[in-house]
Image (tube, rainbow, N blue to C red):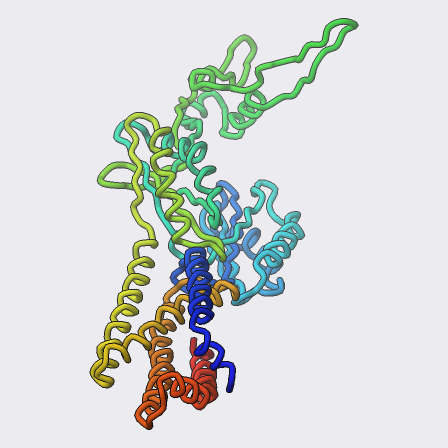
Length: 449
């Protein structure tokens, strides 16, 4: 094969080609995404439906079952599971590997809307969310305070923190854990209500009549146009306590006569603790294509800005993140890569006994590995555990080819040829077998990788 003569006779061209390979490889290496494993489309879609006050049997029969039957026939669904608890139904739809999650999400939302009329009247609209399907979030951030209650912390997170972290590229859901939403809680005394012949439904009807949003519009004259503002809602604890539940002639029965009102949490069933203090956590789940390292890095950069907006007495800390484990695994493989290069250099020197002979195979190692980064970028690969391990295996393949060429050239030199003539003849003889050997090994290792 004569194409090897071109690079032997023109060393400047050879250096330029090698420099170009290194430059393109370094450029691609700096832009390649870093992940733990290769990117796979393995998505999970969650359908959450709430019906306050409904028992689990009702949720199972009238909410979970109709929705499950509707989404089970969607194309791309591998299997689904569901849980029905007091006032809440959660259906988890696991998609097949590499199925189009966007298409499946659209079809599932359409299926849920088709059975919406079959759900109980008091049930809330179903919330459909897509995530990568991992049980553990990519990162958890904890917010705690000795002076601020959990409902207030939850309100701050939902208004300030959640919208900011949910906008990070690759985040599918920013889930609040251990939170307690603010609510006006009415505590009724059954004995006092019975004495006045009142029931809980009477109180609920009074709330609907005294606490609602109205849009009265505006009034227009020939020269004046004015907006009409009326107060139709209750805005404080005292207003709820003074709310009239029923009028008996000249007697007004107020809420304070049959109970009391206080600002508290919607439910006290969930709570969290961080460093011995009540806390609320927010967990970020990645999209199927989301990069955990990128997400964690963005959150760490955002933490100083979040701390600046926090109320006095509140602390925020990252309590768990997966980036450190991913980075540790990658660092360990890189360490193995360096060790492999050193071992190869020592073995070559021990067998060839010449530093000059060792230099040639060693130059091919970084040249080949860095150049491979350009091919990886071209095909959309990422730097992950599998690609790094393949580079470790590739060191042996690269060195084998270089040693074969060096040994063949050295044989011709011993036969009396000049170094230039030996290089020309030796490269011609061995170029074909080296290419065939490389392609064969690549075909063997590619399926397993």
